[in-house]
Amino acid sequence: MTRVLPIAVVLSLVLTACGSEAGIPLDHGWAPPGACVFVGNRADKHYCATTGTQLLSNPDVYDGQLIQVAGIVVASPDGGDAYLFLTREAFDGGEPYGTVNLKGLEALALARFAHQSNSIHSPVQAQVSGRFRLYGLTPDGSRVAQGGNDTFRFGAIDEIEWRP
Image (cartoon, rainbow, N blue to C red; front, side, top):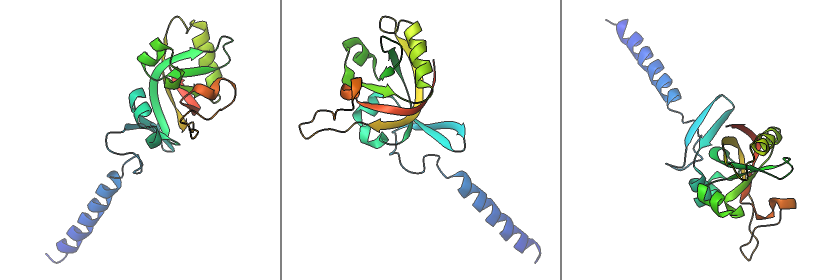
C-alpha cells in the first residue's frame, strides 16, 4: 500500500502537466474571444481565420498579425498586382477602402491567375493568408499615402499564401 501511494501521486502530477500543455491556446492570447479561429498545420505559423467584415470592423485587433481571410481578388490591368475585396458589397460598389493590397512572392502568381480569369468582370474567389498591415490615418481621417495605387486601400497582407 505504501508503494502505491507515491506511484499514484507521480502519475497524477504527470497527467496534470500533460493536461495543462494541451490547454495552451494556439493564439498565444492576442485575439479577443470571437475574433477568429486559429488554423494551420505548421508549428511556426497559426493563422487567425476571420471574415472580411471582422477585419473591416476591428482592424486594430488584426494589425501586425497572421490572418486568413477569403474575398474577391482583382488583378491590375497588366496582371502585375493583385488586391482583395474583403466583402462582396465592396466589390459590387468598387469601394477601394474595402480592399487590401496583396504582397509577397505568391502575390504575382495570384495576380496572374486573376488576370487570366478576367477578374474585373468575373469575380475570382480566393482564400489568402499572411501578415495583415493596416495603413495609417492622417489627422483629417484620410489614409496615409502609400505610393502608387496603394493610397486608397485599407491595408495590405504581406507574405501571402493563397488558394482558389
